[in-house]
Image (cartoon, rainbow, N blue to C red; front, side, top):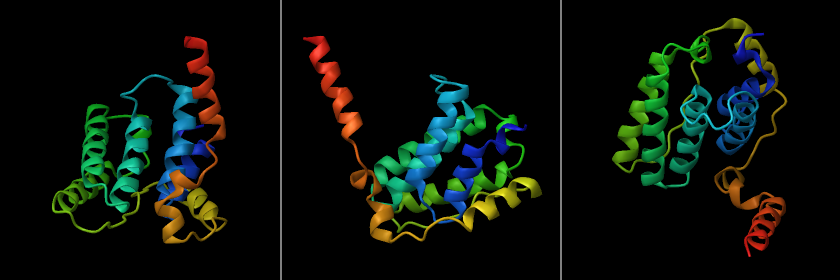
Length: 166
C-alpha cells in the first residue's frame, strides 16, 4: 500500500478538504507519524502536521504562531523533496498556496482556507467518500477545539510525572 493511502492520511486530507477541521488533521496525522517515524522531526508527515497547525493558529488570529509554523512546514516540504509522501499531491501548488497564506498572515489578513491539491484519482475518491461522512462543525467549535477536548489523560500524565520527579 502506498503511504498516502493509509487510513490516517486519508482522514487528514478529508478533514483538511472537507470540514476544515485542522485540529483533527493534526491529531490523526501525528498518530500516523508516531507509527512510522517517531521522533523524526524532519519527516514529511511533520510538515503536513505543521501545515494544519499553522492554519488552525491563523484561523484563531495568532499571526505570529501561524507564520512561524507554516514557515517550518515549508522548510520540511522543500528539504524532503522528492518523497513518496508528496507523490499524490501537487506540491508546487501546495507550496504556492502556503506562500500566499504567509503573505496574508504577515499582512494580518483574515483566515482564508485552501484545499490540498490531490492529483491521484484513487486518493481523491477515498477522500471524497470520507468527506460525505464528516459532521458539519460550527465556526466557534472549530476555532476553539483545543480548549473543548477532554484533557484529563494529559493532565493526569503530567501530574504523575511531577510526582515521580520528587
